[in-house]
Length: 257
Image (tube, rainbow, N blue to C red; front, side, top):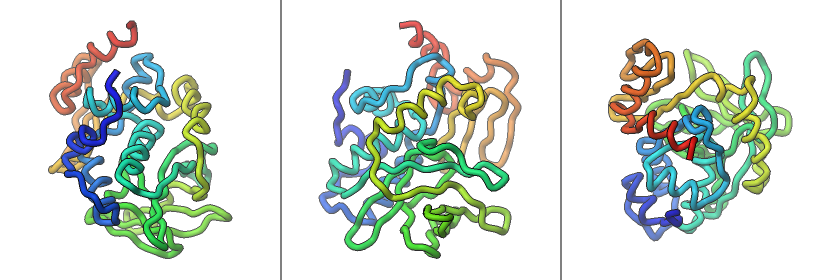
């Protein structure tokens, strides 16, 4: 099994090593991560268990050029930030579910990064989200060149809102308290096994590109403002290979190993 390697990780996301752990570098790391590493749930639909193990995730995401969901992507990104000298920690978040409802605790993992007297939310595991870290100050607005995000308060939680269709829409709520990686394990099992989990609806993979976000599910492919229906597993496999360079047959075979 490949061991965690900072230089190889940086090469995968096309970011040179920098000695200064500052905000500008953090912005670059988060943005390029989102362009180079997809958000996906393919292992769940291939019967491959999600593992909370750093070397395993390095092998999956960096060595084999895969993606993952929040516990994997932010779990690995946390290790990278630590290696680069950032003061950071994991947090748990609860995702907005309309109308006016939030998901269970530990439904999402994100990261807090302390830079001097300010703290920032960093997140590479929420699919469609900010390209830049979000400064955690109530009322603060972060613009990433594509969208804007505002921080406010929801009871005793921070809340992140994005600008959609001319109004602010909630994304998730959280508290900035540090959490152990293992604290998310039980919720991860639920997402892998409970039919009510949104990750059980079907395989999906999404990543940013120069022409916009491309998203493939077993029902449709969305890219550059267009949507193409997917007719069956054979077409899904073809599009997965063409646009994400992943073999559906190989992934399904791994589940039997």
